[in-house]
Image (cartoon, rainbow, N blue to C red; front, side, top):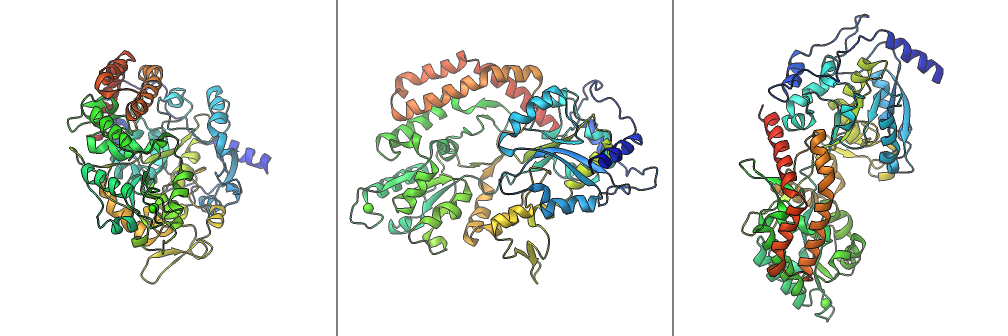
Length: 543
Ligand SMILES: [Ca+2]
């Protein structure tokens, strides 16, 4: 099998034409995405010597062959992704055989990074361990500029045309695109503020929309016997893991502390935790909650298991976590949950203060795949990668195969079959195979997995979710400076935040020293780099 696969791949290699040099691009184009745009516009369907042409549907070739893929195993240890029917279906329709090199999901980055650094990889398609933020692999020349093969990538070029933000993010500093990316659900099912609806009703209140009403509600929860056990002192008004405090309260002060860097409407970049006015107010607010016992003493050591334990004992009224937790981990453990929103932990609008609240989403792009410049069959690899990201295949990734994992109802809606509702079975079937293909997550398929009321809350809150700091490739100078300074700054910010909130540092007398401390750690230089990067991003986006 292996020998014949090798012969096939060598034969296929004979027919491949030499691509133009990619490591020495011409002068920087006026507009960053100019080259990519030109490549999209001029892309035609390549017709091969045999007369076969790939138009975006399977098969991708009439000659068979195999594709060597270096990627990850499933994150489910009992799933062999190479045997998953969905994955096999993609190869079957493409008309090629898989030749896998899969590394363990949990140690992928550690295992593949030295291989990439040494450049001794024999694969056609490679899943990179991160998003290559500093263009390390791009600059190594290890990956082909895909825009030079857009004649073979009709699905990818269509997707780029329809997604200008992601196109701008994927365009490297040299104006080329090197990776096909998977796509996260990024504005849906993100971290959200949740209340115990039964406690809210008992208090005769609706969900607060501003900080003042929120504090009033916490006081009410603290002072009253919300769980009706005859003891008015065992209630913990809110149970928030410390990493979610910036998500929950930063926006009311106009701060995206989750991304760290943020740009205002004029494109001016600042560092949120160095905002001498708003960040100070944020710390004063949290310090106030702490002093009053509304933010508990152990907030830094609270983990999700403890939150779940409290909720199962009906001890707490407010939570903040990934939306997923709402019906899947929190509501379902409440003693009186009956499957309806009236007895659940329910997600609500973000809190507002002097600034209108928002939720911070995440980046859409994830899981990047490139074609090796050492591949003996670059065109075939580009076609396979293109086919594997087509809408047709995304439908497999999100739903599986009709009649097996899902059925189509008379009204055209879909639902998972009984087997499809069994997560273990569905994982073995190969649902969302982002370990090996550029898979795109789907909101619709997620809606079906959660309670109906939960899907409705998600749809209501989508409008309040904003993009985080965009993914922007760094130049090597920029990445050197970022690597040198950013980690120390982040550590300093985290340590000081805890000290100011708990009062071991005094905001009135020590906050100015904190700000000048950040300057001494070279924050201004970092902000000017982020400004430079953001300007590049805007230029690519506004093309
Ligand atoms: Ca009580």
